[in-house]
Image (cartoon, rainbow, N blue to C red; front, top):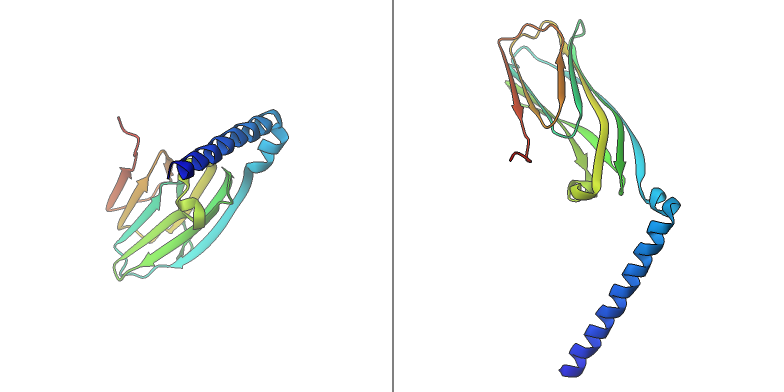
Length: 169
């Protein structure tokens, strides 16, 4: 038993020293460090049919930096997400739509492995543009996290903006 513990301690010590050496080499070799970080362009567009029964549109956009809501003469809702992300792993951004009878929810979020590795992913300069038909006048709810929000002249019965700031002190 003591021999096995001693061997495991030696293995851990060698592994620790090897890790320190490798990290030191990477810090000295900034080109190697830069190649590990990716700047990923993001560009997604969705068009969504809107029925007269829709009383509420919810935008869940906790990963974007800027939200722009515009009025349009088109009959569909158009959602565009664009910009760049910096990531150590590849970053995919998707637009998800949940269409219930009286409500529509549009969610912008990461997909795949990066959803679980948020501490090593840095989002920069992502913009969400939403084009709402000018005939829509019911309710828009925005769940935002650190976003700049611009809303063009749109007449609504109700507008709700909720911050999702998880770093409140």
